[in-house]
Length: 128
Image 1 (cartoon, rainbow, N blue to C red):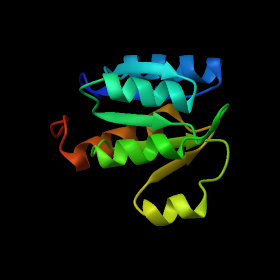
Image 2: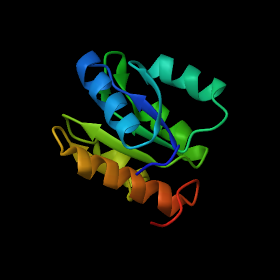
Image 3: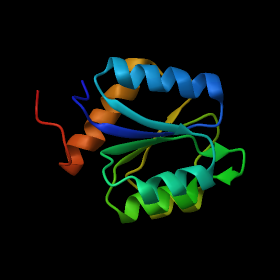
C-alpha cells in the first residue's frame, strides 16, 4: 500500500482522474489533485510543499506534460507516466528510467509501480 504517500494526479479526462483518485485512496495514498492541465499542475507543484510521487498523463488538453515532468524531476519527485499515447523520444532520452504505462493498466500494477518509484527514491515508504 501507499501508506499516506502524497501523489499528484495530472489527468485531463475527468472519469479517469476520478478513478485514479479513488484507486490511490483505496491504496491508503493521499491523492493531490487531480488537475487537468500543465498550467494547473505547475501552479499546484509551486504551492504544494510535500509530494511523494506523481502520476502523469502525457497528453493534456493544453499540451504535453513535459514541463511538469521536468519540474518534478528537478525536485526529485518520482513520477509514473500513465498515458494512452507514446512517450516522446526526447523525453525518453532525458529520463531513461521513467516508468511509462499504457492505458488501460491493471490497478495493482499501477500501485505497484508507484510503490517502486517511491521506494527507490527513499522519500516515504518503508519496506513491507
